[in-house]
Image (cartoon, rainbow, N blue to C red; front, top):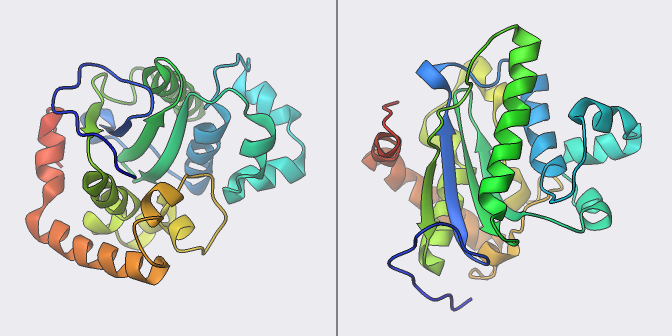
Length: 235
C-alpha cells in the first residue's frame, strides 16, 4: 500500500483513514434489540451518499423486499449499483450495546463529518421515536484517530472488527452485536473494503492468526480504557 505517514493532521482529508468511535450518553444502550442493530447496519449503507435521500422511513418503505434482504445481509450488490456518490469507504465496523467503532476512508470533501452527522442524527431519531425518549443518544464529541500508517490500519481493523471480544461481551448482549469480522472471514457477504487490509496477508488464515494474537494482547493491555478517556469516558 505504501501510504505516507502524516504526523500532524488537522481535520479530515480525502484518501485518508480514520478510526471513529462514540458512546451512548450516560452509558445508555444504543441498541436494545436485534431490530435496532439491523437498523444501525442499514443506515451505514443508506446514508453513505452525498445525495439527498429524504425521509429514511420513506426510503426504506420504497425498497423492495429483495433489496432490503441484500442490505441486511451486508451484500455489496446494492452499494455497487446505486451508490454513485459515496462520502466514505467503510473498512471495518462494530456495534456494541453501548458504543460503536468505525474505520472510514474519506472519499469526498468533508465526507467523514457529513456522513457521521447524517448517520448519528438518523439513528438517534429512530431510537428516540421507538423508545419515546428525548435528548442526545451519543456524546457530541465523537472520538477520532487518524490512521497514519499501513501497520496501524491493519491493527485497527482487528481492534474494531473484534471489539465485542475485546470487551468480553457475553450472554444475551451477543445478539445485539454487529461487526465486520464475519465479512473478513467470508462467513457472510459484506459492504466493507477488506482488500486494503487483507492485501498484506497471504490468505485469510494468516490474517485470522494475526488477529487472534492481537486480540490476546489487546485484552491484556485494556486499550479500550485509554480510548474512552480520550473522549472523556470510562467503560
